Length: 220
Image 1: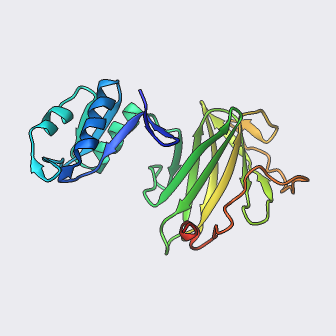
Image 2 (image 1 turned 180 degrees about the vertical axis):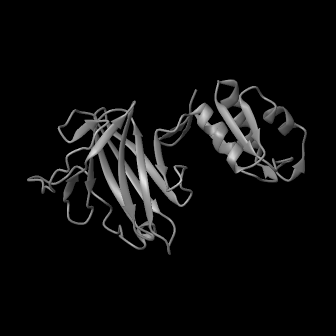
Image 3 (image 1 turned 90 degrees about the vertical axis):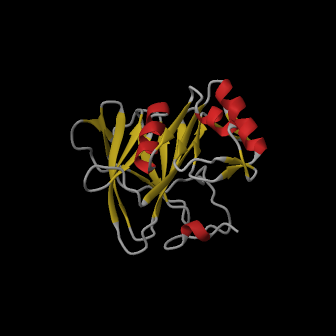
């Protein structure tokens, strides 16, 4: 079961704290749940439909596919139960860093793109990045086209490497699902040299994309 919004598809829907829902949204969510989808709602949950008190929402949130979370931490736990995390960005205490946001995209069967940004404007971040599945990691410079292969290791079924983020800084990675000498299992990986591709990389940023410290403000 998938919820489709234009070209995006979703297996789980997160319903934030709110007072009211559009009827069209409620009908769509009910259909999604009946088809086997999952819904996580965060308290306080809506009690009105289009501004009018309604008991219909009790039925919606009481569905076997819905979970009502008391707070943000409980919502995250429920989400990870329904849809295990494929990318982990952990800080000094080995917990997910709330200041780091990322977008993970599948380009084709062998290639993925990961964009990560530090939303803290006054503090740098040292981060342990974990990605589910074997493969290699390269860092892409969106301004110059330079590609830097990264040293990484494998722990279980995850690729692991360290990354430093400047205040409001961002990084762009390409994950290739193929073997490479740069990847080691359990030990210290050999750091490869930076390379400049002879042909342009297959990622092209929008012409108005900005870099540090305001990379997320470049889309108008």
